[in-house]
Length: 273
Image (cartoon, rainbow, N blue to C red; front, side, top):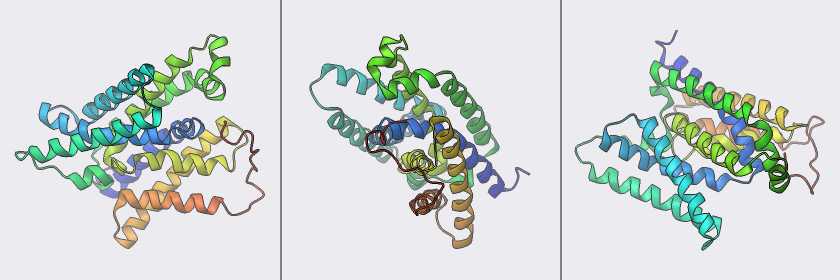
């Protein structure tokens, strides 16, 4: 079964969607899209360091994304610049450093387009094992941290008063983001990872009556986008990673059509879970 490259691609994409959906909900609720972009951009630097140090690519990307997150926390506490400015600096600096390092590595053949836009059709059985193994760990931790993460998302002060330690939850959430970005890099690419996190979650919000339902729907919509994108890529001979994101966009646009299933958000709470 797994000898078929298209079947492997489907399994890998659906596995990623199941993990990215719930995590993407927190990205949407916390308005952390730019943070997701920053971590995704840092992935190329992780790739370059992995090639130089001859270590696993996923491990290198996870390490660099984690360091970028910790650097953001450190710089935020210094209070010299706004979070947006710090994210902009980290995002573009890590991406540029990665590109420069890749340019200097003339002894290594680097598929830059594959890293930037993904190559899901080239996933191996080992990649699928990483996706489902790492994804299961991420989902298990997310379930354990669901209450403190949700409480901190709604109101940090109340979460702190209840002894839920929102700062620790935020650090763990950043680590989970780094893990998903490391897993997703080969599938949709560095420049499209955040799209797969945000678009299914934003689509699910229209039809969800609660946070848990939104997380489940986001996973389902992400999986549907993977199926639609891959079959569209096969039919029209388009790049697989961007095709998946386009399919997710189509689902989002369809969700905007008035429907009795859609929930009408309250303006006072539309940015909360």
